Image 1 (cartoon, rainbow, N blue to C red):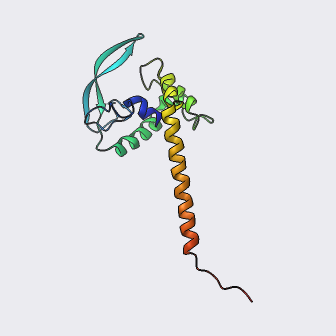
Image 2 (cartoon, rainbow, N blue to C red):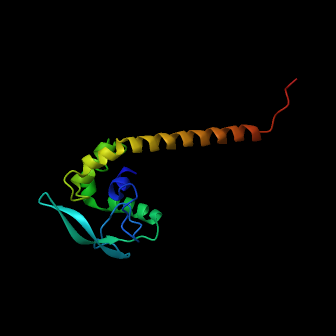
Image 3 (spheres, rainbow, N blue to C red):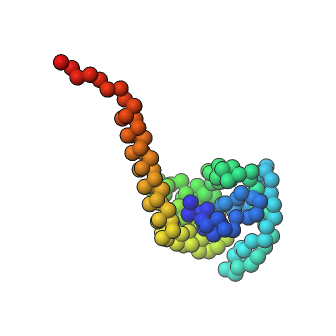
Length: 155
């Protein structure tokens, strides 16, 4: 979530018509549609705007599924420690591994992502999601208890 929020400015800057919320660029192994976009890149520490080809997806779901495969199948992320014990679920370590694996050219990519996942908006969103999940589980449990046939008392 934090990476998608970081990449798209909380959904306000999705590359038009791409459904690419992780800003995954075209690569030789990609067989799907692509589109050129002028985007900021960092070269030798300087921010410049360049035309770059990006993957285009039919839906956000398709983009999410491709992100999983992209990270899993690209050896540079394994080499950067993304899949090491103790990294999964540790957002800071995941962000550091993405930066080390050169996911983005921004030299402060991990720090920017940490700002998002440690920030008040993400904190509120996660608390709300957890509260909704707990309420749904409680409602399902109550419904299940009501649907159980009652057994007569044993004499």
